[in-house]
Length: 435
Image (cartoon, rainbow, N blue to C red; front, side):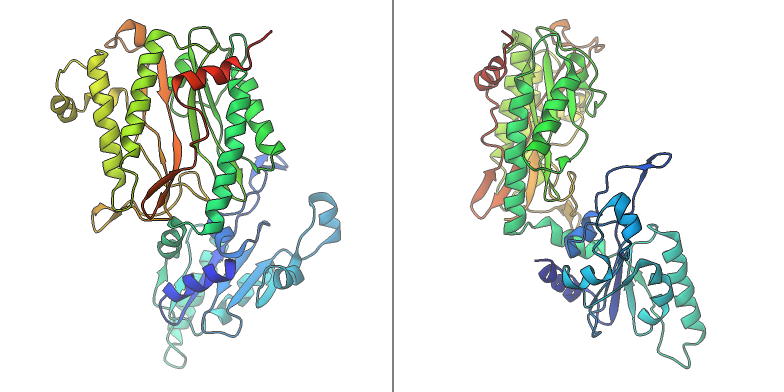
């Protein structure tokens, strides 16, 4: 699979080019401790090599078309931090034609660039590599009369890679289905704890525990567990407040499995019963999502999905007296609806939770194609201090988010098994009612 990806990548490179891609390193958490390592998504996509401090060189016209630079085996270091494949493993386990210690990269760069006409490289990742690359190109220019001409451009490989990553392969889709299935179980565990007196972090712990217990890497992003007015803060992650009766708790959490993210939001009534104002907003957001999902098909655009959600939300906002206007067109023109719906309805999903790939082509929204995976996530958020809103609606936030695969004849909702209709959501919470 990785070899096939590299083949597609080099076929899209300009003739006579070389690609130099850097993997991720360890990031300091505090003093001498590090965050748990996660490989750069592009590097993982092309190599499957999930160890820190590595580099990839692709030379389609050379005998060693695929070269890895990696940390060498070191029994002393491995006693502390675990197994390294080393140079030998880079060849035997990851299929490299050549492999070298990572410390040799700067020394070998001049020779690697000798016959290159273009260099694909992301500047800004490692100043030492950038400096050596530029110095080597400048030195080659000075002697270009006696040698082959130097590279005349440094190109960003992500222009190629991110288009490749946008269309998911069968194996990727299966991993994403698995990520969503684990997320379904995790949401159920958290929803069962959505009762007054519980703390947001208890629900977060149920999510994280399920992700790991079921074989996931962990959360694909910091889990959002926002009770009451915290649900109106889009990226609330403190998760340290108690839940209270007659409120909602918004959970935006997804598992990462085999590098691929799920991204799922559900909003649960604390105690298992929607109060009337909260139910009205919940049903409005659900109707907006259903309207948006009707446009999730080949040839449609994310703009059409967003527009369908916005129009349904505005109708409901007018009915709930959240907007002073009485017509849809007036609300669209004024933009006042953005007080309560501040984000877009969809984004790409894959190795990154906000995955890569252009959203437009030739200045126009790009048509959806089979193999693309996106979220559909309308919401409505009424801040507690919003004096223009009816008092009964203040402090209510609702978002409902599904992960959707575009198919040849429509779409597959990967989250179809995760309850979202009001009665089903209430039942999920009541299943964990304290004795």
